[in-house]
Length: 328
Image (cartoon, rainbow, N blue to C red):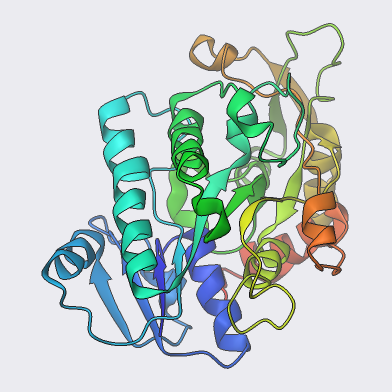
C-alpha cells in the first residue's frame, strides 16, 4: 500500500491520479476536509480508504497499522504563505512530519515529503538543492521557514540518506480550486479575466524588474507529479534515490508571459492593469525564482517539462473551462 497525506489536496490528489495511471490503486488517502471543498479532487480516482490526518497519527501511536506500506507521500501541510501563526505551522508542518518520518524509518517505508521553493527566500543564496547550501537559506515568510526547519532536521539527523524531500516551486494545474487565495496565478487570472475582461498584476518595487517582469519558476502539476513518482520504490531508476531535490521547470518565466498565455488560451485580447502591492506581502515577495534541476537530472530523470504556454493552454481549456478534474 501507498499512503498519501494531503491526498485530497492539490498535489496529493494529482499523485493519486498518476499512481492510478501506473496501475496502483491500493492507496490510503489522508487529509482534513472540514469545509468539504476537496471532494471533487477524489471523485474520479481509485483508492482503498480515506482517513483524517489526526486519525493516522493515532493509528501510528497505537501500532494499529498492520498492513504493508512501501511508500508514504507526505504532501499534507498548511500551505498558506501568509500564515503567521508559527505555533500552528510548527505543529502541522514540522512536528507532524517528524512523527511520520520516524514511523517510516521503523517500517522501512520510503518517505517522500514536500518541502518548498519558498525556502530559498529572495534567492540571495541561489536556488541550488545542494545539501551543503541548504542551511544558509533564509525564507521570506513563516511558511517557508517551517519547511526549512524540517529540511534542517532531516539533514542534522542524516535522514537525507533515507528520506526524499522535494522542493516544489510554483506549481499550477487541475485540482487546485479548493485553495482559495492560495490558488495559482493561472487559476486566479482566469477568474479575473472571465469576470472583468482584464487582469491586475502587482507593480514592481525593484528598479531591476519592470512591472510584470518579475519571474517565477512555474511548473505544471502533471510535470511535478512525474518528477515525484520518479522516486517511487517501483521506479527502476529513481526508486532507490534519496536526498533533497528541486521540483520545477528549470525556467524562469515572467508574470506577463504567464498572463498572456492565459489570455491566449481563453481567446481574449490581453488587457493588463498594474496595481500597488499590499503592504503585508511587500517584504515576503519573491521577485525571481528558478529551480536548478541538475541534481534531479543527474539522478536519472530525463523527461522534459511542457512549455509554459502549452501547459497553461491544457489547464485552461481542458480543465478550467470544462470544470473537469483529474480522472482515470
